[in-house]
Image 1 (cartoon, rainbow, N blue to C red):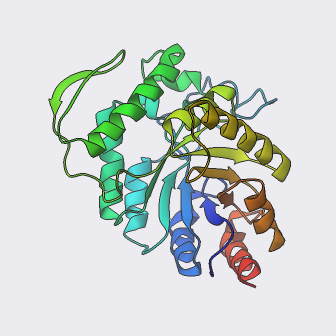
Image 2 (image 1 turned 120 degrees about the horizontal axis):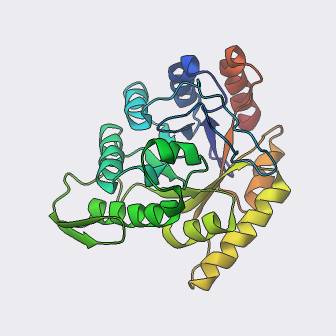
Length: 284
């Protein structure tokens, strides 16, 4: 693809894992910018709630296939050359920052600097219960995990005494390929998630959006960044969305989006042809 007004990523959450390797390879060949793998640690039979506003039930059944995101993305790294490899999103609060930072560092190194670290505070309380962690602490754990990971990736020796994690004199080598570290994109639609992205993230990653809803979130991000004396220059704004005409790329850019994550197919077996059609559309 020629240089486009916005980057285009491919959402793996909307297709059977059977097709992931094929789509990653094809996306790489066609010039798509990134692939985005959903992440959970476990599901339970008692799942409740939903990450989607106005919905009361989980969007997936507990039998949904789940993989270790970074092991799977490292596998895809070995099958691709240029396409970036992202989590959409990793439930960082369920892990110790040593585990999260090491996973990202390893993916970034084996992929030659192609990792994107999408993180979220999680909506699934039963997952936290199963991991024997307090769901009510998730905001603080996420914030602290992000801060510690950044220090591990950039500092020669790290000592940290926080509310959730405490350690002295940790050496974390080797450092990631991307400097100062792989981009951290904070996911979530709530005001708290927007504030976290603006304060701690290199960008924000949202769910499915229209041009109008994306514009509202961009305005909220701009206001949150301004409170800290910063603007959106260099800040990554990623949303799930549709691209049905070449002009849509300009419309997404004009509302402040820098990347659109797409799933241009209705059935998994049509995913490859859907990617080809979209590549032809945006390259026209």
